[in-house]
Image (cartoon, rainbow over the protein chains, first blue to last red):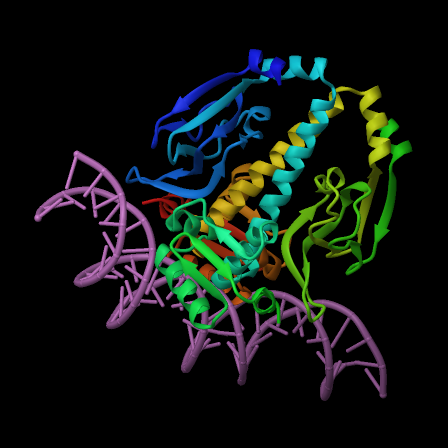
Length: 201
Length: 201
DNA sequence: CGAACCCTTGATACGCTTCAACAAGAGTGG
DNA sequence: CCACTCTTGTTGAAGCGTATCAAGGGTTCG
């Protein structure tokens, strides 16, 4: 960690500021240390189209450095965020001193692949309600039956690839079915079994 | 290559046979040498739901070995196919003898991440017509204006995440607009510029 | 207080799926 | 050789799921 700090630079991003842009050459591995950064694309009307939100601390882009295509997405800070940028050259020096880091990197990338594979599967095979329920169950398992949203509902909607309106309607549906309780940004799962059953017939 | 052959095993798959199943422990890196293998999931009515087709020679699953979740998808041979299975231990021995292989692997995984990121983007932001056109343009760039489908149209539809019926209708639409010509499994692009323009306003 | 957000709700529109019927090969067996 | 079945792709009609557009309510903040 100490070695890393001498090789990497950190940088504060204001809300709305871009971490990197699509197509730009990727010279560094990029991670979010604090705050939240959105991955997506800037629209032709200069509107940012959110696809995935990354909460620190986590890697933001570990794939682009290894290829010559540049970044594949735009990245915009959704709030104030602290960025870590690690040049490829520094990374290789790190590898020499800490060979186990290579394995860590491989595992991180494998994790990213599996997560993305899961995402595409969900998009192809599940409708909006199932995607929402999947999200709720994944978030709940850790901490009881309560899900505290760390994001705006519109960001959650973007992650689920639906509009905020649809998300609102889906939540209402689950509420009137007696399966969940919603108070602001906290959702309580009243019947995880029934939710689970809604996922597969 | 020679060293690889002593460490890896190959194995013929009959059409319809499974290369691996979801959840099963992944002990090997798996590649397709010849033929085509489909990645997807087996339905609750034992029907295989195709999500992506992998044509040899190419990696089939390079991520699962590094994690302990097992395979994330089922893999079924779409025709007779030759499989290469490389145990993780053999792979590490390979790394010692050929350090540049590590970089190759990193780059392969980075490629996979970018490809999957592109796929999710397409699913979230593009409608069926745009996905089809994207596919056609990608396939055409290499070899003139002709696209020779290597797969059944139903498999192409699955890759585009639409039904065969919709694919048929979309093709008809493009034909009557005078943009393409379809003869069996060969598609000729008559106006790549116009197709390109249909992608973004 | 008004302004700027965020979320919700309703009405309507559209893209795609589903279901059903049918045509055109390809393989099979009498 | 022809009838038969299987598979693949095509076409049409109807229906579902989600987006879009418009309006209203609740907070927060200057």
